[in-house]
Image 1 (cartoon, rainbow, N blue to C red):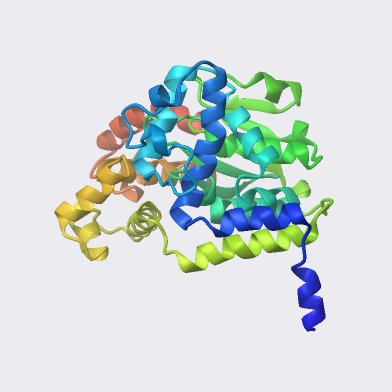
Image 2 (image 1 turned 90 degrees about the vertical axis):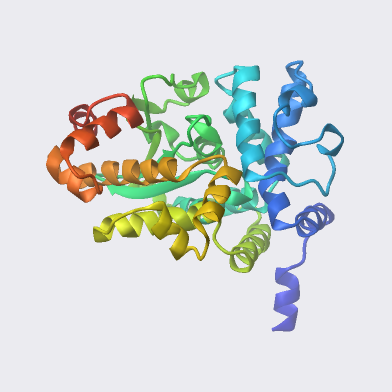
Length: 350
């Protein structure tokens, strides 16, 4: 048994060095480092100096390539926003995703590239995605012959985002028939040329969504390095068990449950549930570059899309289920979130 275990965790020199790189970093560094290590070189090749890209964040230029450097979730969000503004390349996040995959900047990359099936890949991605980029939330659901992931964008963040680009690149690299995949995009987002080259189908959607055929999820995929997959998965699970859910994850779960149970949702009630004062709770939201109202809107938007995929509820029913006092308030909120009325959202999802 001991011999088998030793053999199971024996790697070549390159794999050992990669694992040491992961193991010498703390969890907060694992969250931030892949984003910095992939984005900064891309920006520099476009003539954008690191100091310019990081302006307005708390990231000091002299620390950007330090192995001990950490960045906050708010700084990561600001960095993404500035990259969108300064680089202005619609394929930016696809290029960042390819860099993360080719240079294997996180243990999660090895998990995604070597998981036995795509179903497991999606599960690991949703569970451990903070090891690649903070403030990315995706929720999966079944829709007809597809499993779909909604990418719930943050206000001011990249609308298609790194998460969407990463999963598409993983599918393509693993030899899946990505031409059978479907991408739902808001009207202001144009499909990337590389997606069109790979034959991905696109359709109008209130939020970015990725749909994969159910039949592809359980197909056994080639595992070129099963030992590396096991070691990387162990490391991801270790991070998952030794770090509590993030503040935003806990907020999202609490708000979802309160709305589902039909209870009143207030900042004061949330603060009490989190064992915080109201002012401390506000500071936590500010630290993460968001607010209580934005998070409540985000959960309501997710619930709205989920409800409409289950049944064509009318506006009064939706308003009640989402905690609004009347349907007019709900209609105004929907137009604020998506720029369109609930009837058009219902039509797009039908």
